[in-house]
Length: 166
Image 1 (cartoon, rainbow, N blue to C red):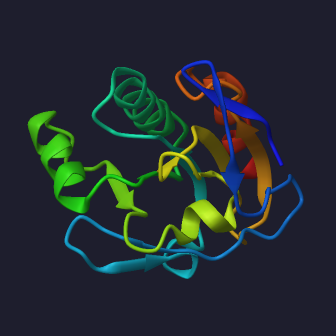
Image 2 (cartoon, one colour; image 1 turned 180 degrees about the horizontal axis):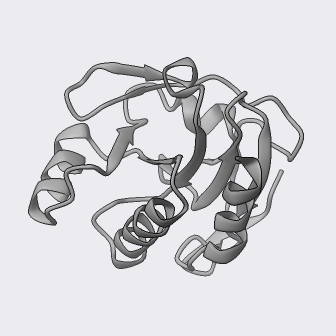
């Protein structure tokens, strides 16, 4: 498993570490309208899965904005931002920031994404910061588990992986 810290303190990640070349694991998360979303619902597109501890923090806010802004320049790339925030909080964040096209998904109910992708922080019941790029056939082409959960991911590498996955 990846070793990460949260505000300098070591934390335990639960679940299975995902590696480049793996078939993307399934998940069951909630959209802002409380409907279920699974991996199958997103298949057919290149996806950047941007995992954040909480959309209401500065780094998570910046990460969500940056991936969504940059992905539109690539075209044909879908960005999914996943956290354990309640769907209501994610919807409020999108509305208050004028970002209607941003896809935020909540892993609050089952933490199935967190477990299946190895990002569930046991001590906090939050998701660790990570980025996964999937091609249109659900193959994992890029993985980054950010070693300090309060740091930014490597945007350029993830965006290049999305370009290459097309």
